[in-house]
Length: 210
Image (cartoon, rainbow, N blue to C red; front, side, top):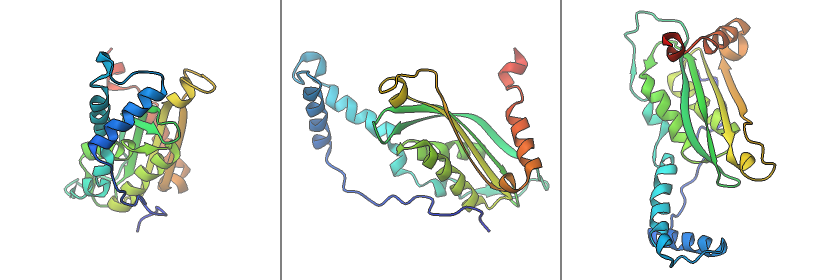
């Protein structure tokens, strides 16, 4: 059974404005900032921003559970930790709409089946490419993997810089935030958790070949 609790994705459908309405909203913001949207250099900015938002927030159109639907059982009874580390992600703070850029480390201990490693990275992206807070993002990734794969345990660790803190407000560049969610054996068994931490601290492929 799954060790996660709570809904994996509680977002309710929303009524989306038209592209024309979105572009007009950008023009309003340009005027609010003191600019003239009719200036030559800004004429195409509303359409560029709208297209960028489609990319920034494409996670709303992705079902993370479906990404994990195809699994593999021919693993020769593999029963050790699977870890995908240093997954770069880009998100946006829901409070200031400022970028959050960081790395995710995703691990699970298979019970019966494994999933293609690219799918783990895609689950991270599916939740990251939405308006987020890092704590919820961490929990959503871990809960989804744990619920769908039903492993012995799931662990997710995120480390990220928040531009809502580095470029405004307290202006503290170089500060990173670390969050984690440990489920199953990673929460209950200190030896398994220490093994995961040791794997995270090993040199990367790039460092080994340097």
